[in-house]
Length: 120
Image (cartoon, rainbow, N blue to C red; front, side, top):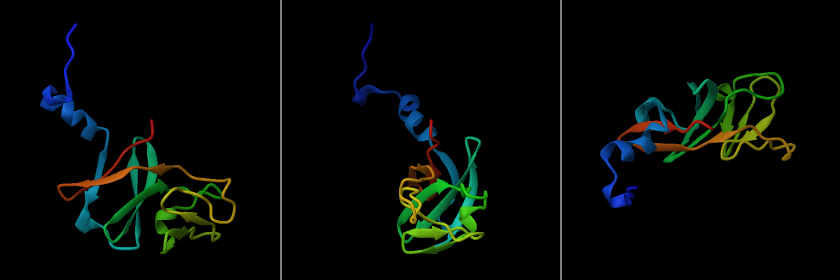
């Protein structure tokens, strides 16, 4: 049995962590305080940029299925364009009833690429 330390991992093994993420665009493709929807591992995900901070939550509002990426972003909330349900873009919490959440996703930027990690 062979054991490898982190120092001796192959490039392929190191790249495996990056491959867990899906590239959804370049930084320049995103406007501040705007959402964009992308398919990530079979799910629609809304990605938001706030300056140098990036957030991703389920794109579909649980109320009637509207695209949250099309909603109005103010501070750390996005308002559903159909019926004004407000969700925190940081963690997906419904602002009016914190016991309800949509999923949130990890986002990172590497080499000008915006990447979202699917939920397993």
